[in-house]
Image 1 (cartoon, rainbow, N blue to C red):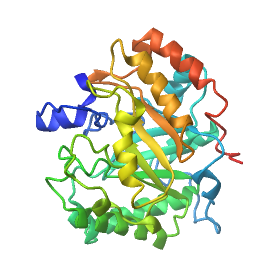
Image 2 (cartoon, helix red, strand yellow):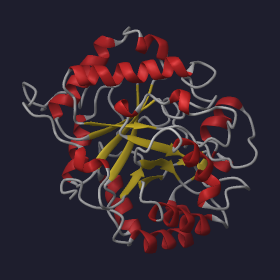
Image 3 (spheres, helix red, strand yellow):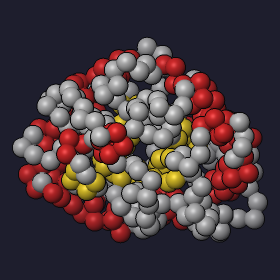
Image 4 (cartoon, rainbow, N blue to C red):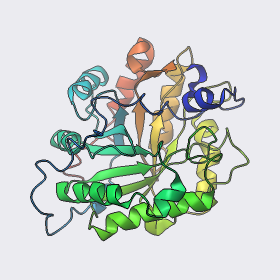
Length: 340
């Protein structure tokens, strides 16, 4: 959609003023595809082994590595790595963080996680509870599914990033401000985390991911924060879009300042891109400069989809060329299998 407000405008019909920097179109079914988890459970525990390994994978070296994550969300990956190969050729550098979108009820895409890992990349799953309420998740009404899922993650025993119910501070999501209270959100998150811990799935990196605050300035983030014991990364969703998004600070500054009042966890731009148009070249420069200029920012994920707006880098050759030059910086990208 124009102005990057995929979720907000699609779900609310509102035209937001100021910095329109809302997340990139993760609506039920729109992200579904070869890269998504499978409702029938294929890609789940198959081939994962008959029993859980004795020692869970230690994700600690991946939490704040010396170099930055260079990530992408691209249709079909990581279930298929063909789109990642194409993106690598286009941008001149192989992504080491691959995001995909899964609905609550999908099976765990172990095949995709293995594919990404074999290519030196970590998988980030945005888990979207479209069909259930957060209150029911917190109350344990979906524990059979949840425990099966957590067990599949544990059996695979490769690092996985889970971003559950992102953009909870917006009114455009089915788990957002119109449908759930901060207390319900926190209870659901903690129950999810505790269930994974109970089955021994310590190979998960937990990314708590609000939308940047500008579209909903009256919604405070602290009440939605599950606590440092339940979060490894803070993942911000924000786009360079709208008249006010003229700098990195204009897009992310207010949000990062607010977040730093209650946590010092490493931050990742879990979903970002720049609106098509004459300003995209400058926006790409702002993105790279902003991430390299902040030691607490561990990287970004570029949303390379044509969804309501064409966020794909290939749609703008001059901006793509700028992106290629900046991505060549040795501070971006590393083999996640050798993070030190």
